[in-house]
Length: 87
Length: 215
Image (cartoon, rainbow over all chains, first blue to last red; front, top):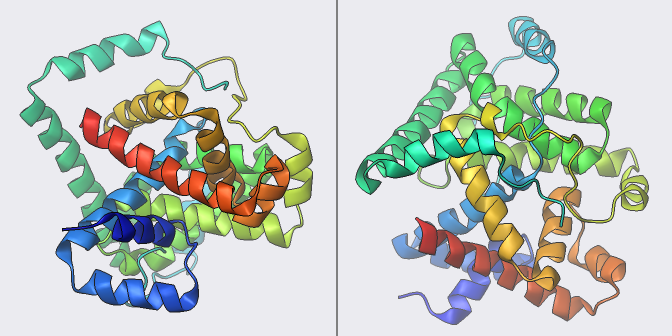
């Protein structure tokens, strides 16, 4: 059961407003609680959904071709393991 | 606030979608989320076709976001390109158990755009240029150009944001779209820091409650 204090901590964590030591304590709780992981995931989705509140504007048509050209020119995906919740 | 309202052309697809049984609707959205995640996994393996398809699905909402953040079409184009290169390079870091693919992409591109704004010392200029509210750059609502699963979400989130009290909405928007720190927001809004922190936190929790009520 997630209490109000943990809800506050989860919100601050998603907003990046925890001090390093608070963040470390929270992540220890996070790793041990599936319920907390679900809450953080939902809060992150909510925060990211604000992107959809912006007026919709498609990118210029030439961007995609340039990007694909850059990718073919040698940018390769990194093979690294994610270590933090927020990219 | 000047968030564009729904326009008549959007009502038909939205109504058709909402007439479907709730279970089917959620299944369709879940299927879309799973497809996004599968595309990201393929991108991590170097699949250029998957990258192109992911671009088709995400580029419009991501460009809209960075356009709002930068208030500059050229800067926005550069930010989008840099963001997608990061998506290509860092796709392997996506963890489906921790976020949706769209959330991951939004946060990655948003963070890179905030870095760009700060490095180029554009933050002060943007602060002077915008009021801190979401403002449309055109008179035409192009929501219909979003992928179907993001289209309905966009209409919902706009409604939810509109319903937030102004003193909760403004700090949340300044945090998200301008990447301002809480201290910077407190200065901008001439409000004590502790109050701003509480309002942003409550604003996020109100968003959570609103989503839970609607979905």
